[in-house]
Length: 110
Image 1 (tube, rainbow, N blue to C red):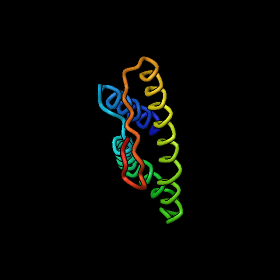
Image 2 (cartoon, rainbow, N blue to C red):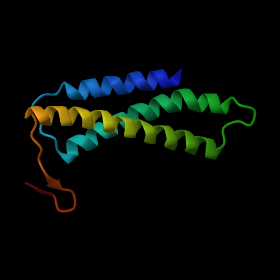
Image 3 (tube, helix red, strand yellow):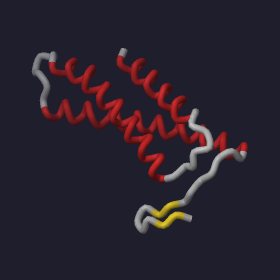
Image 4 (cartoon, rainbow, N blue to C red):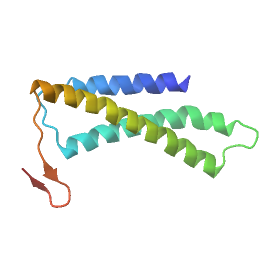
């Protein structure tokens, strides 16, 4: 049941971020998208899966909490990056996108 909620959440964010037209793709923009998706999924996972684990016979252990917060969120971010990459590729193929290359280490944009 939680997987359907996560799938809906990811589809919503991919659709929401894809609607923003003529926005230059920078490292800051991509980091902001990933942060929003991470926070939304972390809230969803901690409000649904953590109580399920806490109600088991041995209760919520530290390793349960760590596994619940690391493994699903990594898969969610991987799925989101693939979905957004497909969108970027299709837009770039049409020539409607502008990439700004920025060096993270030096803060230089070209």
